[in-house]
Image 1 (cartoon, rainbow, N blue to C red):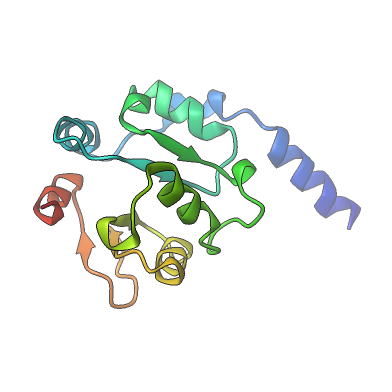
Image 2: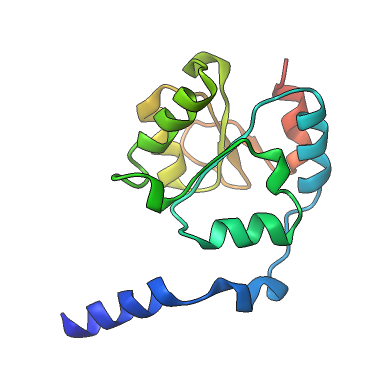
Amino acid sequence: TNKIKDILDFANNMSFKNFLGLMKPEKNLKETLKILHDKGLKMAVFTNRGHSLHYLLEHYEIDRFFGCKITSFDVENSKPHPEGIYKILDFFNIEEKDTIYIGDSSTDYFAAKKSGVPFLAFNNNLYEAPVISDHKDLIRYIK
């Protein structure tokens, strides 16, 4: 148990800034975000990441596209609990039916399902969800 606590402390205090140079954004991500943003869509991020989210968004110069950013530090219940989705819906004052959740994990899928928000799977065959393999494929789902 002390070993587990030490590992969790290490992980929680690790700076992901050191790894940003090794990470690469998905193909067409920035271009698609710009198109959607220019269409006036409200976009948000809900992640189980902590403070590293802000470094990632700034590093890849995509921070400005997201009006709401919910991390594990902003909720009492992390994914798959839908608390973060509810916060986003409240923030933008929108309904579930007017929203699309794009995710790549089962925790994303279950958070969306529990909240009633339609879900698109990114590069992952998750249950019965439609799959997109390129961010630009998102554009066809936007009315």
